[in-house]
Length: 219
Image 1 (tube, one colour):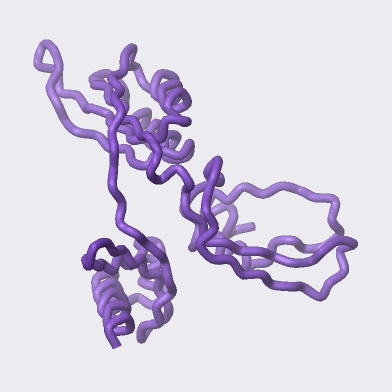
Image 2 (tube, rainbow, N blue to C red; image 1 turned 180 degrees about the horizontal axis):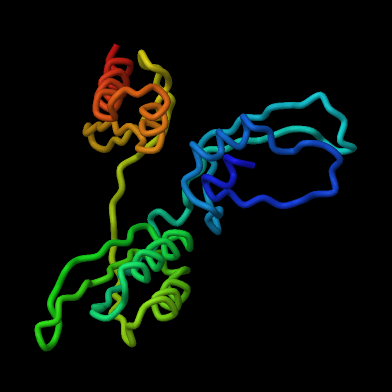
């Protein structure tokens, strides 16, 4: 329960007489999850199944999958708006809601508006299917009364996330590649958790994880 509360993980009651979420399971979910909801359509990259011995009156197994959004190469839109009278808290909440809805990226840029008012330009990148949802989130949570939107294309590197064992423990590292270009990027939350657990600096763990991942592939 403490892990669920600390990481904002949604729970729901069931009619099953028994524990359906273990401390180990919810800890794994807290560390590994990347969003709160599944994409509308996705491709399965890898899958694994674990079987339990307890009789719940139905199949007792857990399936875990590494998935990729099936709309990766679909049409994308950029939504922009300039805002000079929303609070920092409102803007931060708007960003969280946009990411929660499935936006690929959200950021702010400082700008100046009429009468030399300092302001921020909110920019969000969303798939076409979420365009209306993202627009309504911005209208409902900021003071803006108008938006700009235009279709864009993007190119992404191939990528996979893998666990890498280092001297202090295990870190998740994202490998990205395209046309002979390869990068290894340790996952922030994974490095942060190990740093807090061991007291070793974030940078030291990050550098070791990246170097280890590179050496393992080149061995």
